Image 1 (cartoon, rainbow, N blue to C red):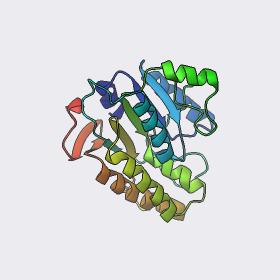
Image 2 (cartoon, helix red, strand yellow):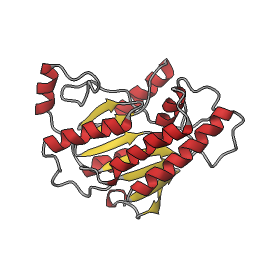
Image 3 (cartoon, rainbow, N blue to C red):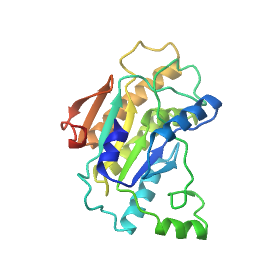
Image 4 (spheres, one colour):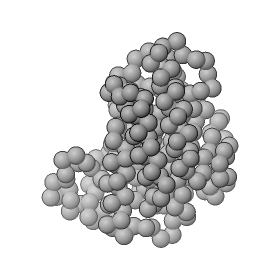
Length: 235
């Protein structure tokens, strides 16, 4: 649903993925999702520091003068799935099943990359000539929270990072969609870590929903608007 929205918004799109592909099964999922996307997509992986990634993306867009003309609406959208995210990697015992949409980066010339150490000169030249994205799709908050818990961050520290991300969503220089999962519709998990995950993700979803103009709950592939009505691209 979020991908469909992004593809209707702008021809050049950036996929910001929080997934860590650390086993063969996840690699297959990554390949499947890469195959689902057509042309016009760049991809960047950032499993932990989303606010910093947003700052770099926004600065790159601003430097290119990419307050994109012809793009319908500069409004952030939060799309939530009714099934819990599949939590992988270093967060054992969550006992959750469902759908996750983490994407491994496709290291193409001109992609926003080398975030920590800086791009090499030839990469910088390619980035300057590459078309800048007209829409940003962040996928997903649930795996991001799982990654932060795997780093032994406490609830307060994680929610500080969520608040920082929410500040970036308040006035983005390009349309943004944020994908998350709703894990509060099932049974209370037996694992303390799983209960913490549910609690933190629920608070994160609330915080980010407050920052978004539209909030859409997706069940059975059908969008249910919770805030702001449906974006016109989903009507």
